[in-house]
Length: 451
Image (cartoon, rainbow, N blue to C red; front, side, top):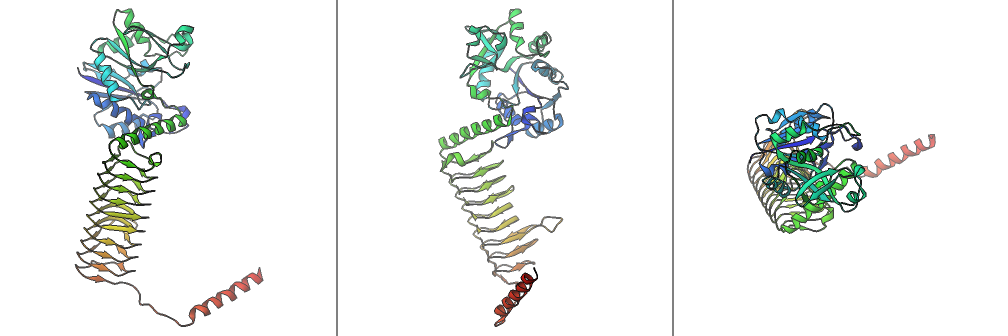
């Protein structure tokens, strides 16, 4: 059976107190909407429709970065969930199959839960998703079941005391044949206190027509909705806990798990050691057997087997660290390739550069890559020794086996096996230091007296 996704993403999220649309608020440095899209991708949907409203252009841009084939329907007025799904009708013209409705602000639905919903569709016309609440709450509609059959969904305010005690509650997610879904939506009424059209009414409509409806159950954590900054923080914390536990099970050593921050797409190989207080930004892959030492920040980079990073290192986008590369304390690397066995150990900045195998970059070395208008590349060959406090003024190349003297400013290429020295001749002036400080003390005394 073909499948389509309709992801509701029109809400403004007033309680977020933000100019950013709610579904674009990040969890693990990835927009909530993208989390929902990735969860739904397990179904290999033939079509995906994002129903946007507030900030529709930005929502569409983010969605298409994740999947350029998505369609975006705009809900000009937010008139309820059924009204929102109705906006996807045109984008699904000609589609024959099941529609799965997801919420862009419910990012933690497990792929297996969606697969179970699709499996249940083989036996039921309408499949809703529910969960057992830990405590009785007035927030959720109650799922009234008769065996496997879902009779109706009753809102808390309309429920009897007996119904209010039911812990099986509605998440709002559903699966239904596309033609039937829109047929039922056309019959939904807005004769309620809010004057809106709700998907929950589909259950009663389906039963009234002699169709079959059911509800499958998932863990409450999967349906965690995010409506405020506090919810966002809680959702992020939940993601981090789950992701850290997954790494531990995969054979990654986290020396202080609660201090490691992961992005949604972080990939770390087994037998890698992650020390405390490491932050992984988006698009980081660390191969097996690497070591990321304390207080390092990585983003948009690839770290190969056996490499050591940190402590206190910053690895920025475009960086490739080859096997057994060493990046030490207070070193920043940006858009650079550090070849096998090369070392950049102390207090250096390497940007827009290529460092050859087994080369050593001395403390305080800087690639001067920006001229105020453009970036330029520095190329360092193999087995090069760069002396401490060297300035490499790009574009410049150091050949294999070359060396720079400490304090050198390199402004032209250095041929292989050559030594580059570029610094002013030292002069010592006997007695000048004491005379100079006497002059400064006298000047300070005159200033203090005048004050």
